[in-house]
Amino acid sequence: CGRFAFGLVIERSTAVVVKECTIAGGTKQWSPTAFCGGIFAMYSHDVTLEANTLSGNGLIRPGVLSYDIQVNGFGTNTSSHNIRIIGNQCRSIATQCCVGAYDMQQSEISANICSGAKTGPNNNNGYGIMIYSTAGSPGSCFENTIAQNQVSNTEGSGIYLVQSNQPRVIENSIEKVATVQEDHTLPVAGVALNQSQHVTIVGNCITRVGRAGISMADCEANHSRALASALSTVLRRPPQPAGMRPMKTRRLAYWWFRLVASGRFLEKFLQPRRS
Image 1 (tube, one colour):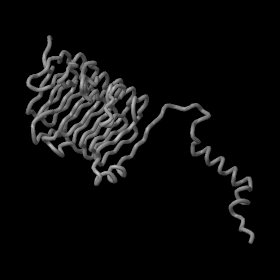
Image 2: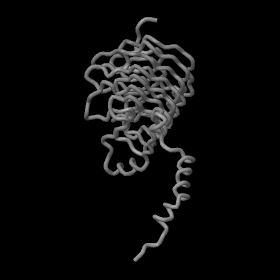
Image 3: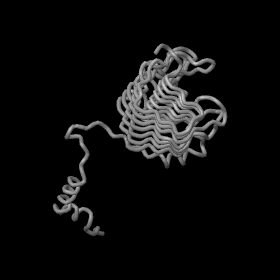
Image 4: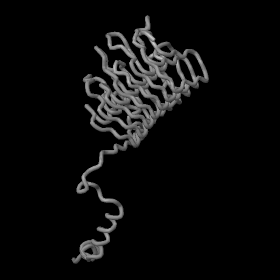
């Protein structure tokens, strides 16, 4: 199909479904913006992007930001709600973000396969999935769910949330990410949070990460306690050798019973002290 900025642009639309399409070739910068890539949905609501295959998109060049799937990205007082990005394969190797959503709320990014994002020259991208509240639309990102995605082989963070309120990061598989990005002024991790609050992170499997598994930065002081109390993190690790596995409940109960039945428990803990 030749070179173009985006394979598909959805602008100021409602109730759109894009399903089971193959999109490639979004490699030409869209002037005067910095963008190019596969699918671009802007100023739209109730959009479903499902089971699409995206590859061969993106452009690694100074001043360019490229995505396999992008939501918004410029403008003021912008927001999109009920965006569903589900079951897509984002495999381009020249994008700086597999899925990038700006100013998005009450939406879902789930069951996608995301790999190959690069940091690019003079920037700090390379993200698998990014949700970002822009300066022109403060408070625009809230109640988004990122669930059951497979994120791998990205040079930046696997999942990156900026100024997000009440996001849920649930049961994602993240491996071989954050392998190149080195800027120590930003959080870089399997899951990285920047100025976000009331975050739930549960049941994710995060392995072989170049930096931290989970990292938080620049959370406002008055939100830090709420963030800490709301942050519920479970890291599922690869199976350990049999000799290193923690005791299961039944086995622990067995050894507890043996201790009590042996009499040493009664002798040590239940007999009254002698004066």
